[in-house]
Length: 447
Image 1 (spheres, one colour):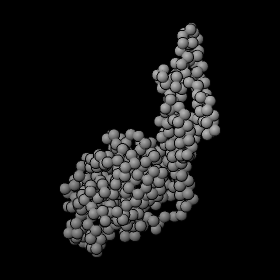
Image 2 (cartoon, rainbow, N blue to C red):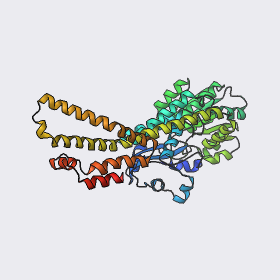
Image 3 (cartoon, rainbow, N blue to C red):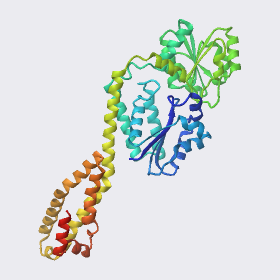
């Protein structure tokens, strides 16, 4: 089991750095191909969200140097990047990905969006042929672990979401949300959830602007709102009391000058801005303007953390499930890894059986076809019975990670039979030929 995860997230890196590594949906396949081409990488998947960028690979034992890949691909100085990176390998990598999929490593513990994001990255990698072996099994194990956490605990039911934080902050600014107008820029799921919460708590109406106008129309229809063409955004922005942005733009869509124009047209009435995008949609300096209350994704994280109630009991349940599923996967992958050894050992036993039959070929020729079939069945049955315990011992040693037992059992077959068993007559004679008494005694004295 050779897995490696390298990345950064909201805990280790500020949004200023995360936005420089953000990978758009259009660029994800190309970046995944580039990672797969890295020396030593056998399988690869990239998870890029507003809160994390992670490279997950299986490798052949040759260190893939993933920090170097990130620095080169995003034209970043390694000295700036590496202090913010984390690295997990093998079982720790498995545990980390299980926790990520189960939303135990999320900004808002228990939120549901991350599982869909992991599945999307998995689907992209599978379509490219970048995930097809052990890494595929790891990710399917992560989905199973996430399902157990979701169904067997209440970790998601009491989570403080970004949407609920948005409602609380808006209430602090406006006192009441009654009659307030919302403008969503972009059609992101998190923006939609925030808008839904705001409207459920009194906001009056909603506008949606998106580069693809049809998507703006579809989202606006859900709220009986109005779709706004993207080129009309700045002309209409002053109408909104609450502005939520979540686009995939590589540069800001609202500058300080444009924000000042909005305030001027609103005659000083305050505006609440939620910038959920990474990279950010709104110039951070907008927050310095009087009447502009700007919160980015990291600000919302801090507020969410301060509002969290004690969920220690549910978190402990979830972590216990992750530990169980990690151990289950560890045993499964070791059993899979032992498969070639089992095949080799069974192959050696079959060669011995065939060699012995070959040695007795003259006697067997006098038998009827039915009698020869009976001998064939009997010898195969005896071989399977004799091999049952060694094969079970190999599987048990693999599950338990007992490397010494594995080598002992495997070595016994290689040393005793491997170099002798062959399909030829010469091999048959070598296997069955009687040994001199002194050699047999010497071998007995060694065991």
